[in-house]
Length: 247
Image (cartoon, rainbow, N blue to C red; front, top):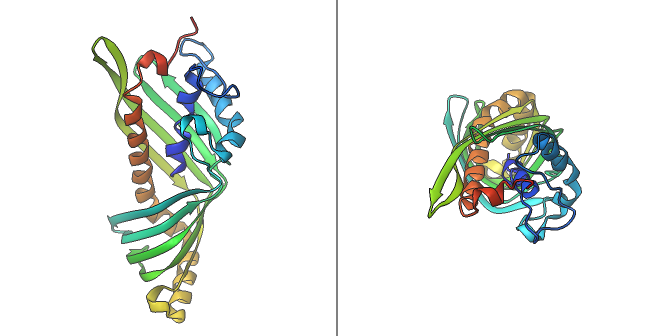
């Protein structure tokens, strides 16, 4: 899910023809009839560079990707919890497989789909609530391996003109995650009551499909917020620098 934030940067890298960008970045043009195919190929070609980060554009290394702190909340019938995560670490984000990419210059809408075999996540957690009717409480350590994951992104925008210059402006982001299954492991929760911790782990994995489905809405909203935050940075770049023409 956090991969969406970082992976979403790549189409704009490939479209930009700035002389300040590394020579290994593929170049794709807005008026190229094969533009979408060009960007699709570029997504997958850039995997090794994405793993190590691309300093010139401020892309951090993704092997692994670490957030110092993250707070997640959800209140639905299947999951009602608050969780604070320290050293939120996601491994293997560069192992994506871009299956589809489309950009419609007329409607200013993006649509693309990414697949992952697995997404391993770890962190120190403080949690209260329940997931799929499984109670979780206390401080400890958590690990999840989600997957396979199928992520679909729809981003809609329009053109805003300022001082005679056109800029791309995002007005809606929708992320749909299909998380087929997962494995889950916690330590030290319930004041380190080993009986309760063992029972929680058994229940989480015996009901792993339900657990994955239950937490999906939170992960989708997290991805949407990340994409929106990144898109705000694009409003400072003129549209035809962001989406250059071949001539």
